[in-house]
Length: 279
Image (cartoon, rainbow, N blue to C red):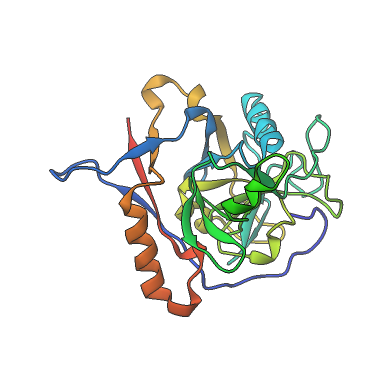
């Protein structure tokens, strides 16, 4: 993550699941909304397929860079060169050594973003002065809507939270040094919050991320064989990935289930994110 710097190993007990729901059966389905195919990153790795929801509303410059490099074939064949058990899997370095970058300039940090009242948010908890929830699949912390009444842009500050499956931009010691590298969280690591740019989350294939060979560096590492945007795949290979709409009662049930299971230890990272996959 920080190129050339060792990272402390983390083994936190917060876990999240991604349920791929069956499309069969007679029950009426809740309202679902598809993720734009332009914002789905499809990584076919040596361990299996990983699909990431990109969030340009949270980190527009980083998402644009990932989309550009993906369309150039930059990521094809690159290794998961640094994978720490119970923490994260890092890739995207053209040298496969944690010290490379693309031909493009480094990116300015997007550790936080401005959230408008029009951006859908599933509210999971409201501790004093803050709101915890989900925007799409990505867990966030944000100021409450009431602060929008007195901010110049009528928006509130927000940032992504490093729960399992969240994808962040790798960088070195300098905040504005992210370029092509990224890492996929195998478990939660809240110490990264507001220190590394969050630009997406794994919606399919978290088990694949957790199955990658570990090491610093990895011996005989797994690799990304091809990386494509869903929109660029042949029509016959494209899949529609959908999440429940923010107002769907399915979220209420899942949040209640997580609260009951975790009690006082409840975290937004404990919320199961249901995913519907269709043609």
